[in-house]
Image (cartoon, rainbow, N blue to C red; front, top):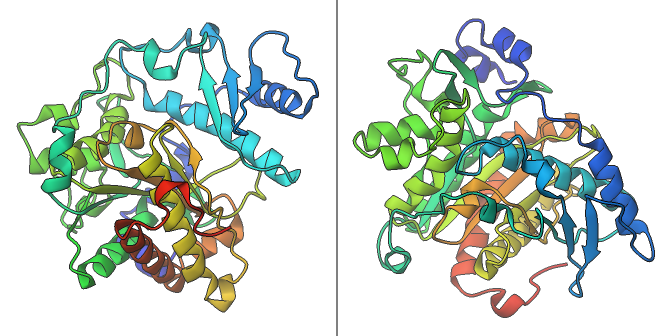
Length: 383
């Protein structure tokens, strides 16, 4: 963690983050599910003995049937962010293990008794704007810098991510967002940041506004619009404002008529050797996939021009991943994992101003190429 960042942290924060470890409760031990998926993907012919069961599609993707029991303990009428996170952890573990074995990272989609995740929850996605209005009004690019402080169970303010290898994701990604916005401004491209950049303390949390989650910035911008910043229906769960925050990012972008959404995160894996960059888009959305591919190719070029990062791993094919940030967006939306904060060398890169500047340059170039139609029709931009 840099000296400047240490000066900005309120007293005792490092202890709080290290002690708390994470905002979410400990995830269920899904190692058995991961092992079963891998065993079936590697078997020939595929054999399944109950959920999970895996089928290979003709396009190389995989469909994993998880069964109804997987959702038995999930409450509420909307998909909770912690369920998205659990499924993504399973997907990531499978991806990394297959990658380590030299297998191609084909898409992995989950089904629950034959149905998509969204079909199990009665409250559908209800965007705030008409989809046809997005292209003709509003900001060009909405830039979301991951997480921040949120109110847990109505009583305790917590950061959404833990201290890892000297950094906290919530407090590092805003630097990438700021540099990306500045790069867009030089091109005359309009943009909006999801989080405040103010240094003044939040009146309730007491933490600087720039460290607060998007939910609270959206509340300050639109105090009467609870449909943007308080849209999670289950108001009894301790994670209600955590879930509000995930949803507020795309809902705020929809409200301001964003043409493209870019969500910047850093990654985590139980496998400490996991390293590099990847991006995710919502399944079935071709323009989102194209945006991810074009941007990843441009970022790889920009990053690897730096001698120190000439071999930095950038996976140039975006993968499907069911994230609320992408799922609720009206416009093309991607979630970029810039690197693994659980990997010591990645954590160093993520805090390096030169690396941050290269990422911003790649994001700028990728966005411009996307607008120019690069990769239309599924054409490969880079390998």
